[in-house]
Each structure stands twice: as structure tokens, then as C-alpha cells.
Length: 317
Image 1 (cartoon, rainbow, N blue to C red):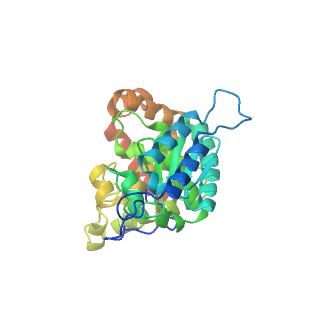
Image 2: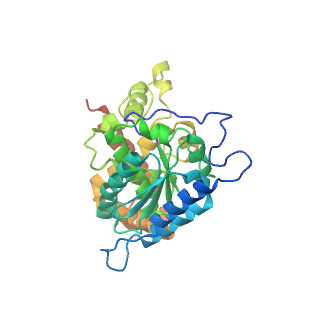
Image 3: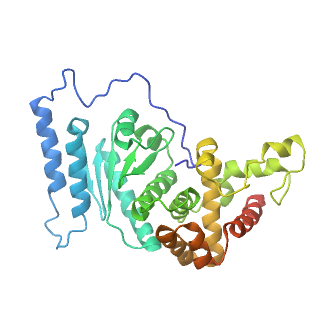
């Protein structure tokens, strides 16, 4: 997910040889021993923890992830948090992400409710991140949630500010917690994850939605219509409609910001519990019935109100 706090657009280097398997495809015995040690650490539960073990499912999934590509995790460290197991390198980053995941998990639980925990994988290279995330794409992203796991793209994540790292981890753990049938539109799925991610960031609206604010300013009006000038034409894509997959592909920064503002508007007008109820109802029955049942709105009605709210917030200094 794009985060306007220092995330660059990062691309994997073409032609880089995958380091997880040495020439000839055979792992030396000492490397196999290192992988076995990592697996043992994953399988070991806390002696002080009484059953049921809240980390049982993440530990088993982490074990499965290591067994899928053992060569990728040679020398990897393992950190266990309250509801997350983090595997990867370097050790300091793994420990940091485990601490971030604890804070993020508490935020997710406060907003969404309990969830079964997560596995966070921290490979050494962008190419390895792409392999782990496939078929999801990691280009330009600091992390991605896929298949119940969070894959960190190391170069992009390293360039984030402390706030940006917290936002990204919380966003991705929200995706893990809210995963379900493909009935949730992209604006709600990504907007809700950003809503939870930014909740405790303290960042102002115009900082989070900087690209969208610039586009809205280029429109030259305060109500979402254009003024017919060349400058106005430059921003006509902004806030036209709740963003869909094509918007997230063509103008990702603005689409994420629009989606976040839509969820922020719902929480501001109806309350955070109703935003959560909308998401849960959408998982069950789709967005149209959920909007009518939970908010008493149609999609067109929500779009009009969101557009007005967004313009008002983005116009403020």
C-alpha cells in the first residue's frame, strides 16, 4: 500500500540471481542444519504460556512457510509477539517488526475484534519478496498481505519513517484480520485497512492525502466539478466516484486516499462501530444491501456525501 510518509517506488532489479538455492540446487549440510534450527524455534511454544496457545496457528503457518522454501531462510531469526510470528533477516529488523505487530495487533483488536494472529515474513531481497507474495504484486509496496501472511519488501520498508512502518504493519494486519469472501469492494477493503492503520498516527488529513489534495486543488472548485479551465481539467479524476480496481492500478496514491476518506467519513458521521458493521455486513451479503441495512444509504448517496466531506477536509489549510 502506498503511504505518504516516505515510501519510494521500489522495483526489483532485473537479472538478479535468486540466492536461496546455490549453484547445482543442493543445500550444504550446515545450511540445512540452520534451517532445522529455525524450524525448532518456530515449533517451540512458551513454557510459561498456558493452553490454549494464541500463537499455535501462526507458529504452524510459519513452520509451513519455512518448509516451502528452506533455502530462503538460512540464518533467519524468529521473533514471537503477542499474536504474530516474524521470520527473516536481519535480526534487529525482525525484532522491531514483532514489536510493531504487537502494537498494531492491539489496534486491530480494539477496532475489529479478536483475530487469529499472523505470520510476517521478512526476506532479504525484493526478488524473494516477489516470490513469496505471488500472485500478489509487491512492486512499489513496503508490505503486502496475502494468504493470511504479511510479506515485507525489505528495501521499501527500510526507507519508511517510524510512523510509516507502524501504519504499514497495522494496515496489513487489518487485511489479515478482515479476510473473507470476495464480496468487499476495493475502496472499502483498502480504505478500512488505511482507516485502522492511520488511526493513531496523529497525521493531519492533508498530509495523509497529499496527492489527492493537490488534484482537488487543480480542479479549481470546492464541490468536485471542474471550472472548464486547463487547470481544472487536470484534476477531473479526483473524487469522481468511489475508487475501483482500475483507479488503484492507474492512480494508486489518490485511490488509497479516496478510499481512506470514505471510511473516515463513515466513522465520523455514523461512528466507528457502524463502519465495522458495514464491513462485516458486506462480507455476508455484498456492499449494496450492507449500505442500506447499516447506513440507510445507496451507493450514489454515499458517493455524494463522501465527495462533499472530502472536499471540505482537503480544502482546509
